[in-house]
Image (cartoon, rainbow, N blue to C red; front, side, top):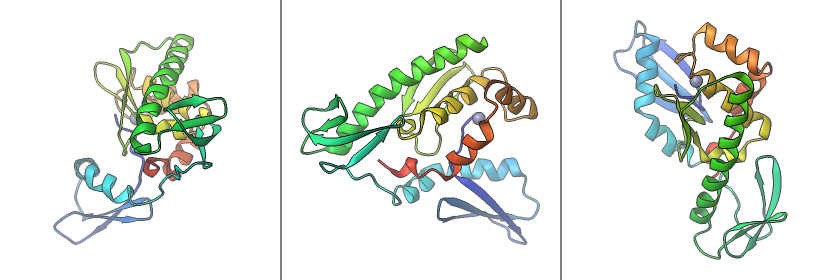
Length: 210
Ligand SMILES: [Zn+2]
């Protein structure tokens, strides 16, 4: 199940069609009075590309030399060079910095999130099929019915604690495929402070950084 990054606000009225608009990072959905919540969410899901495009216009990272880039809770200063992390610096080529950084982050996210997921699974007895990395902008992570977990490379912009919550969330989906009460009870047993991270994720602008 996807972890939708945006906060969604549904406004029902005597109308016949559904419309979407954005108020800051909140998705406003105007819907007919009797439309089912599940149908409204399916509508939002179908328009996730549109939402992504709108959000991509918000906060962008500064990738100039000397700018600070925070990756997994650690600050690095940007310098020109062949792509890679070096001490407290992240080296990026003169041209095509966004693409170079995306490639670099995908690699580091695959390593870090694979190790993190494996540790949490081992400690709590979860069974999953593997970890992949995507460029998703509307979800931090997802878990399919084959128990394969995918993380957006954009989790690199989050703090380690938040990444841990995302991994716990997806691993709990290997047991419960929905967001039913039992699912959240399991999340709470593995990661008691989940509400704080969930709230933080809803406000985080990190999806629009790159
Ligand atoms: Zn979920």
